[in-house]
Length: 278
Image 1 (tube, rainbow, N blue to C red):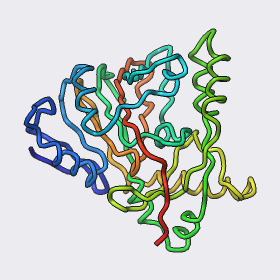
Image 2 (cartoon, one colour):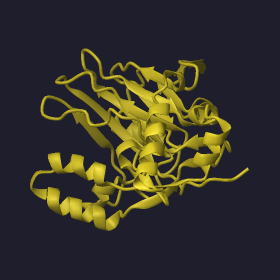
Image 3 (cartoon, rainbow, N blue to C red):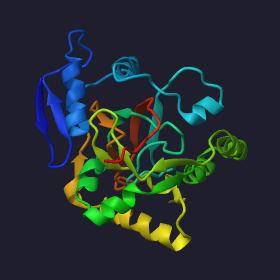
Image 4 (tube, rainbow, N blue to C red):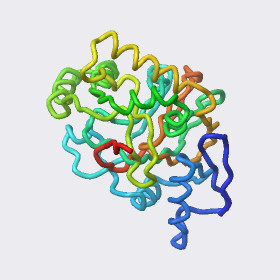
């Protein structure tokens, strides 16, 4: 197994390994994930069942909220397809599904259809972004609680769900009301602190006025755009990426429209985010 960093703040590619191998040193793979926050397996070429089996080594695969509303009782892949009739809606740094009480622990993304041009994914180290804060700003962010909701997600659903849109939106609001998370979370395994930010899933900062909340969120949004915190992966068909949702944010570059891009995602169940004071 060969582990090669791909950027300064986070990210590593893992070569000379087959994740389907029963003799896989999974402990080394998992440590690489904790150390590098996102890891890449070039041309892993996994079937859906193989991706699910590998994902189960990281934890319990989760059932996506929309699938659960429609009655799903078993985990299933989420297929994200961009094309002429479906623009990319994820070109903003975020952590997945933070509008639930227990967002995912990690995620596995397998590239199915690669556009001829563009279509990269970027990751941001939320730990590096926290470490770069001045002491006064770090103290401020550590003191804050943020309200997350699914209104931004519902807005996207309304454009694609057709006749079921209104019922689905009502069910999402009913089953997944707004939830509070710390602005800075403590990683349950490494103990490191990370900014917890989720773009359109963030409503406001609790106990701040609207202008104050906007100022804080605007600062965070700009801060995490710094390239020093990022890595970028140019996909080839069959590539697999695994990232730690507790210490990263990600975005899909929206530079491939109207080309087709299809990717298969599996989320792993997580725990309630928390912050541990020093």
